[in-house]
Length: 227
Image (cartoon, rainbow, N blue to C red; front, side, top):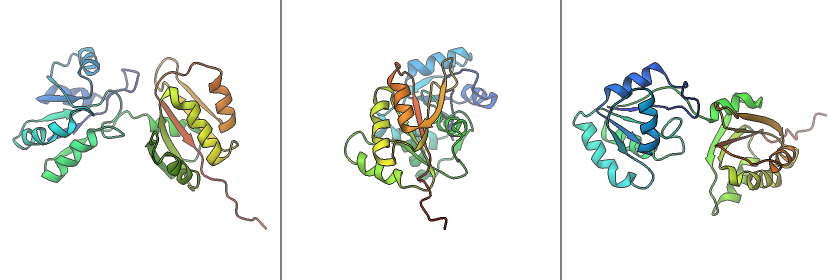
């Protein structure tokens, strides 16, 4: 069986007792970065062997790992932070397991976009998760599509591309569209700011932006006539 185990996105207290138990009981822990994950496991006294599974080697390793799982070797899959499979190569392994009939269990736990969405104060009864936008080809097409959605949408962005992202969102959605930028979630310098896209651009232009970032944008305005 493969167990997908969420890990803290910042605050090390954000891990479940069940996750710690599973990481101790499996034979192998598959990790994006064995150095980062090694520090996490050491913090909790977990001595399970680590094996690298990341964006640069996943295609070559997937079938071999699934063969081991099929033979009865229990493994856990973790990412550097958050829930594996959300905008990371863990999806490929989970898909291969499902296709081969290997049982997959995903534990509940930390992920960045849920607290950002809830704390934004923007409607979240229905929402669209976009993840990372394409860097070049197809980027403007996706932005145009997102701007026309009737639901709140959620993006991941890197700190050095945040201002560009806010500019592009303003262009496609209008500078007055409400949005939220959440960064350093669960960490000492956590910041969650909801304002218009223009106000967010001004705010983050005046500071050195660091940390992983979630951008939440409200749905398009209701332009239907009220007469």
